Length: 381
Image (cartoon, rainbow, N blue to C red):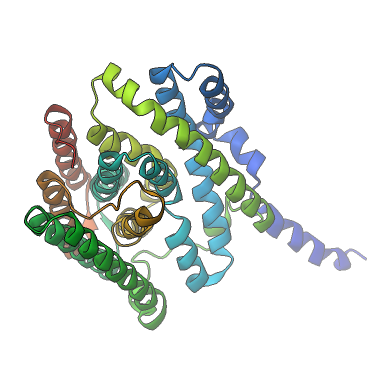
């Protein structure tokens, strides 16, 4: 009789290996910021003139929503296999940034959209990666990661840099119509390249992109939600982000003037870091657990998603929902920052090892860009 219960015990242990949405909200202080969501929606309806308050509250509200979205995507992707999981991450990994950018795109805030694109690429490559190296290095003397993965991501970032240089270099000479046509064709090329990159890393050459440090399989299951809960959270969080993003974008002009921040700085720093809050926390957690491959994969993979997937999608959608087509023509400083980020990724990928001081150096590069953009904001482009 006692032996017949053992399968049920195994099932219960397997069920307990995961987690639930409410358990995570109760024990994760970051998710307590969900209280800001109803406050934003109510104040946005009752007092839409309170721009600064709405800006701060909506930024705080997006952080836990982005974290929920990231965890839901991870829970679904983990149970669907590498191929479908990679496609889900490509589509949903940067959904928060995409929703914010789409809202700004419909409002004609093209400087904010372009600054958020550049900011997401640079902050993921420099801020997320540098802080992960720093936090992991403070706990471990040195850490290792797979050089093949980092080199692939660095190469794809370099391609994105080239795609930004061409329309930016020739756009002023050729005129808006030619630049829009060029941007459209380059957007299609970048999306196709990104799709081929997924096939390469998850299909034909998957064996080259394993972890440099072996880890137990039980940790992979911890914190994952049941598929039904994950799908429900995915839908609800996406809808809430859409509503909050609309309030956020509409409050930018008044809040920026009151706080002394231009649209470029807000897009580069605030939107990029707030939108990637969930991924940043996951990258930090991986580094502190000596799973640096996870941190490097999240940071550089997210940057590549923005450069080769999100940015081209925004260009294509601008022909449909924007007041005018958006081009890939950026201000010169933006091109330099993306090139610098791809150069850092290439240099970091060479050794496959890191330490805390390397993380500090990478963070210093990011701080240099953020300070410069705050003191010397670019003109509308």
